[in-house]
Length: 372
Image 1 (cartoon, rainbow, N blue to C red):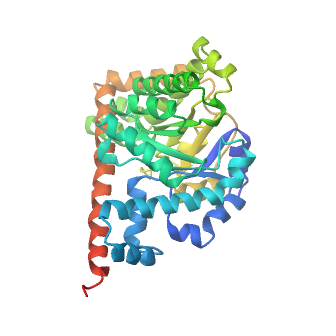
Image 2 (cartoon, one colour):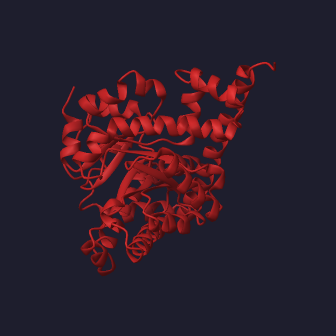
């Protein structure tokens, strides 16, 4: 074992766990990760809940009660997922208090089928915040075109947000703008800006997966030379954009009103290509005021053999731009890749949600009490 997780925390990277299940809560595992492995937050998504609830571990009694009440499958899912998030938030509450609200947070996502519906996303965000009823919750809203005004309005209501499914630098700029516009609304409404937090989840590994696939199809030495470089370059340029936006004159006025910067969060940090080191998207994305949300396998790999050598983003911007340009010069369209990844991300989460609805409906029917 190394002290890599401790060093990562000391470099200003908040370590969040990209997973949640009732078993993880009730067994004491989540508390153990917080106590021993520097975990200071939790992220969830529809795929994570689909996997957890479908396993059935720890959900039987609540499902039986919901079946007895004859609730709809939609209501059942919301009762189950918000219960898990509420319990995890309670476990993380000491971290939340100790960090002044910056960490100790648990994310829960709006229904992914609403990704292209602004009004419904806002309504769902308000409902989830009310249902969980914990100050250390983040409501996840996807960074689709329809999601942007929903982010502004939700932040403007004083609800903290995790903006998810960000792949492109252009869209990330729009996300930061949406957050700042939301804070300006909240300020006009007289809300305490110091209580409003946000992270922007910039997805990493999927960028390499898609671009590497296209590079491999080319099969040239030039294509091979840039393999596995695009995702890091993209994320590092996102951090450059973050530095620029949150040192602007527009931000200065909000900074005076005690507003919090929207931290970049590195998501999808599990390495999918075995040719790369399994801690690539941790070791090489170290910079202050960031979050890295890791699946447990990546957390363990980092603990065992992560190489944390300080800030690995500073001074990389010129090289990162050159690496993305090299991909473009080979005929691979950056804009095409990131749009495809956003579309696929929305579709995958919606598919997981639909799978969860079907499997839960089957359990509710099985457990439903007989008439009379």
